[in-house]
Length: 393
Image (cartoon, rainbow, N blue to C red):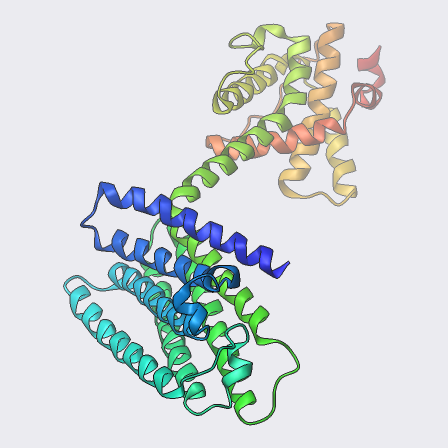
């Protein structure tokens, strides 16, 4: 299962690399796009080179398998630094980007050189699969690991801080979502560094933890990359998901209004603005048409309105605990059902429905949805029974 997750994350990383390289070709001088492509490329390479079936077939690593960890960790350093550059470019004040990049680049070089020096001094053996457990007690290995993990932790904390800062300036919801995903990715990266460092220190001092370090670190690394890729593509899928959610919300609203519209249409087919067969029409048009025709149908029922039915329905709804707009919707739905029955029989009441408040389209739709839902619970038979005997005659 862990190997399948590892392979899935690698595939996701290389797909992201290919997608972003195509994007970089259109704007090759864009520092942000270059940093983004570099981060994905280094992340994907770090995860790929750590696969035993791969590095065991590379002569360079076959002679010294533990060397793959230095290469892998170096790629991770370059990946997190590239990610840091991307966030720095987004969050830095105007004119400060170059200075902020230079400082962070110098820190990265110092850490990378220190890692190489400590690794050479440690000269670990051939156990590459469980590197921490095998060599944490060796001289300089724990120091090497703490140098590597210290850099990752510092950079992840910096990315988290900058992502939250830029979130306050982001106006688009999908961009804020992407930044929150980056903040989550950096938190997982910090957890990766903290876990690996704690494991190395416990092993160094003779208290080896009861769990295996590799699976936990691999899972956290995969989580880092998954959240990072999701965050960086948020500007692409965010608007599409937002549009899909808006469409679904409007479609559900339209479906909620449809039973009330059908009841009015069956009695008064002349209320329609166009043919009812509009399945291929945009949902916004169908919803707008539905609202207008329901309001027109209510207006056409004004001669058949019965205020006593509305009053009795309001009292029953109030006794059932309804208040506010739901109470008004229950009374309105019962009165509409009774008015439709009266229209079918041609019984003119001579009364008038109350004047509806002047609402905007969004508020009007919400009011009609409540009325339509209440109408489902009000059948024509029950409305007829609620009518006074003088009206039913």
